[in-house]
Image (cartoon, rainbow, N blue to C red; front, side, top):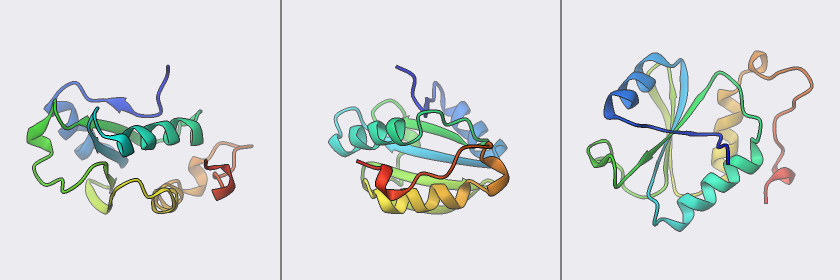
Length: 123
């Protein structure tokens, strides 16, 4: 199955993504975390053809513990713009995530014929 997000292979990949991407979303999760699984499924269903210039990466807690030292709960979603954290959401807050996705997707990023996802599109 193709996912909207990509798994990071190394800590170096994390720092490269965080510092070189104009905008990115970092998901801190764990394979045993129920809300993390729901979040990823929701992202895949809500944004099935996500090809906008925003990177979405998944940091697996058990595999990259050194990157998760400041994470207070799972899932944690960080919205990064110009290498700075714009906002952090702890937990699976569909409304909050949707609002931040809409803010990060600037009008010129959205391909012709594609509209932003409405709340009715969420399960």
